Length: 456
Image (cartoon, rainbow, N blue to C red):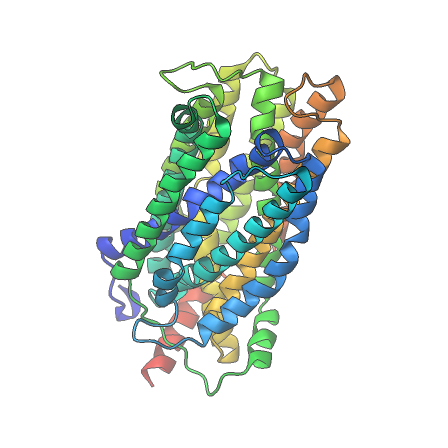
């Protein structure tokens, strides 16, 4: 390997990837089912939920960069980032379950409960996922190796997403015996236990290999170095638009199938209804796309790949605006095309995040891995919150009423939210990536020079 960097073994790459499986047991449930759970099961208004998603990001605006600064300054016998996978796993699991505990409360108390449990879960998510994400930046000094790790990470992540999309609906129906609230409670107990165990496996199977070389800790200089990192800024803006796209589309998915397509929950294949089959096949195809990441990176620059694949995915999403509600298998086909082309992009993005940490150290002499990842993770969480909040507000604006026959205006709004708006946000994200100016030649140069500095 170039620069005499030892390649990572299968055990470590898979062990790291399982950490994102743990994350996605909650993340994908929130992304796909949370708005629906709050409106159609817990009994909150769509506008109130949308507002909550936005208001609670005030906490993340503070907690994410603070966690990044704390992690960068952590020194233990296990490293800077790995200890948090051990310490924060149980609080993460408990908080995730608490969101779906469905206590018997008044309407106003339910909203308070939602605010408190959602905020606590986001804090727990920050405490474990900022260090987990930053770990990829120090698991190897090689950008090529980190791209491989990112591929493993997102194969594991979307394997979890496939399990969520395929089995949550039938599992909560089976466990709840017709009681959706109880079904969600019991399902989340299973996911909570699995998440804790998987994070501990990641802790046990990984190592930190890149140590910063800098004179002293200085928060002001760390932030100044990060804000002067042009590629980081491009990724920050792209993350906002990309996750807004995902949140609006996934947040409207259940409404699209329940009210526009007319999915009544009846199985069309074994125990799986139309919504579950749609998500399951799309995510299976996406995993195939992720598996091509390394091969594509051998022939194309990450930046160019990301732009082209994002634009193709935007076209596939926009096509749903003109797809009739009775053309279910056409919907499945279009969705599979879109998910296949978008498959490599998460691994590309996270490998690029790690490259910006190297780039920042190369330019300034200060390595702020966790701060870089925490700030980008905040951008993602903000994008998700704004997107989910936008979905909730738009549902209210279009006159949506839960569990009722929808008006033509409401149905048109749901269709617009599922197609045109995500496509526009995806294109905005692709435009931001245009300003990311790290190429393979630059990577080879800073890898060589950083290795020389670290050796000295």
